[in-house]
Length: 394
Image (cartoon, rainbow, N blue to C red; front, side, top):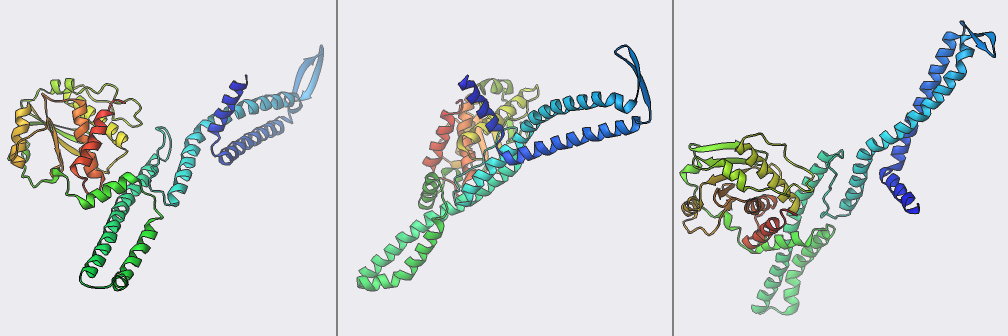
């Protein structure tokens, strides 16, 4: 009994998130309801005051004014109606306001953390909550702040190393320790001031690691200065369909039904807060739906949602076709069963090696390359893509 009472109290508490807002809303509505009933009783009483009604009470014929006759019944029925409607109002308003008060509470809590400089926060609302558009705008703003700040922090670390190198160079040229310190001191002081300013912001260690690696390493191999083959410029010989995230190109010899069959999306949609609309009946529409489903899942796994992302996907018949395209672009042998090229924003795959996990791996490369302001090194991007592949059906 105690356990049930405790659960009920927790349930009510969960719905009374913004207690003052919700209770004020409910009380004011109930007061309006009481006022409406009182006005109705008064109007009925005034309008029926000049009329009479006869009735038998205890076997006696009684003549009363209609107002006096119906007043007790009217008051009783209004009282019962007020109680029933008030109960229904409380239940309905708690449910409705919960979808508003809950997101408001979440926004207030997260924005308080963000105001303290914690840029690692992302605002996550439930599927049926209000203000999801506002949360998405705030998350986009945070991403746009995180990237340059993390890169700037990495650059600041480089600057400190450069100051030490300058000091060492002065010592090598014969300057004394005090003289070298005096020369680099103004620069070091400014660097420390900048570092103090950046210390207000909390950036995840992963983001700082990425930024530092980006500053110290060569860019991702996908940016190779390859030249796209002529067949990628023309749409002739391709069956084309579009989805939310992709434009899919099926070469003339590709069996689209086979692609749809091999693209197994079992369990991928489990737990997803956002899903694409249900597909049409054709095989190409179903393939487009599955690609969007993989996109949503990979974005949720990585917690990376680049704005206005749209990917080109070229699907060939077999592995030999992919090897030929790779050789034409990079002038070297292909070692991958599928690959994504950032420079032309295109994923290359084959019907023969098609699978949801392979596509998740390459889509992760696409998301990572568009999420960061500077493309991560190959090994870093590969680790992230492998993570998306491994957890696709979690």
